[in-house]
Length: 390
Image (cartoon, rainbow, N blue to C red; front, side, top):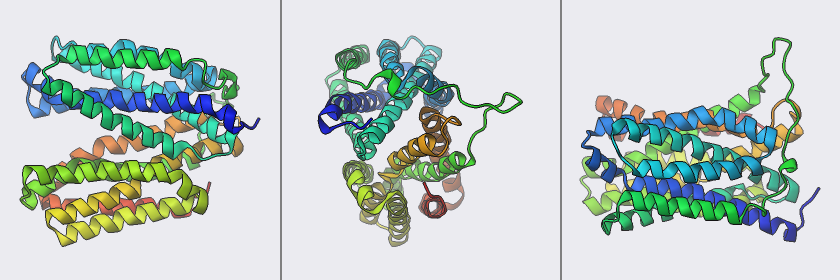
C-alpha cells in the first residue's frame, strides 16, 4: 500500500499534533520546576532525585510500549497512552508531599514514554507507506511543542496561576487532541506485527545492529544532554557572562535544533542518512571543540548553535533507519515499535547520565575542559555512523 498525498494528510496531522502534545507536556512541566522546589522546601539534590523518577518511568515503560504497539498497533497504543497521560498529568500539580511528587513523575514518565514510542512507530509507518521522509519534521514539531510548553508554563507561573490549574489545562488540551484526531490515524492493522520469533530457550533474539545503533544514539545523547545543560553555567562561571548572556547558549542551541529538524528530511533525502549523520556529528564535534578552545561567552554561544544544528537530525534519522531495518531486513525478528523502543532506551540512558557525569568530571578538571568529553563523543558518533549501513 502506498499512500497518496491526499491520504497522507489526515494521519500526518494526527501524528504532528501528538508530537506537539508530547513536547508541550514536557516543556510545561520543566517550566514549573522552581515552583515545585519552593512548595516542597527541598534542596537541589533532593529535587534532582525526584526528577530522576520521571526518567525511571520512561526507561521502564519503553520495552512494554514497544510490545504493546506491535501487538495492538501504534494507533491504538498512542490513543490510550494519550488518555492515560491526560489523566496522570494533573497528579504532578497536586503536590501533597515529596513521595507523592516522585510517584506522579514516575507515572508521567511512563505514560509520556508510551505515547512517544507509539507516535514514533506511526511516523515510521507513514514514512514507509508514503515513500516520504517525515521523521525529522515530526521531531521539529516536538521541539516547537516543548518551546511552547515552556512559554505557557512561564507565563502562567509569572501570573501566579496555580500549577494545579496549569496541569488541568494541559491535560484538557491532550484530551481534545486525542479525541479529535482518533479517526485520523492509519488503521491499527497498518503496523500490527505477528508474534516475533523466539529461540528454543524462549528468549528473544535481538539483532546486534540495533544495539550498535542504540550505542551510536547513546554517544550523541550524552553529548546533547551535557551540551544543553551546561552551556549557561560555562558562560557565567568560567567566562563571567551576564545573567542574560548566560541564557543564550541554550536558547541558540534550541533554536538551531528546531531549524535543523525542519530541514533534516530534505537534506537526508538528498545526501542519504549516513552522510547526514556524519556531517552533523562532525559539525557538532568540531564546533564544540573550537568553542572550548577559543573561550569567551560568545565562543560558547557560537559553539552551542553549531552543536544544535549538528545533532538535530540524529535521533529522527536513527528512528527512521530502525523502522526500515525492522521491516525489510529483520521481518519476524523484531517489530519496528520494539526497535524504536530498544534504540530509544539505550540512547535515552545517555541523556540521563550525561549531565551528572559532566558535573563530576568538571569538579576534577574544570567545566571548560570537561566539555571536551561530549566533543569527543560526537566524533565517536561519527565513527559509528561511518561503519554502520542501513
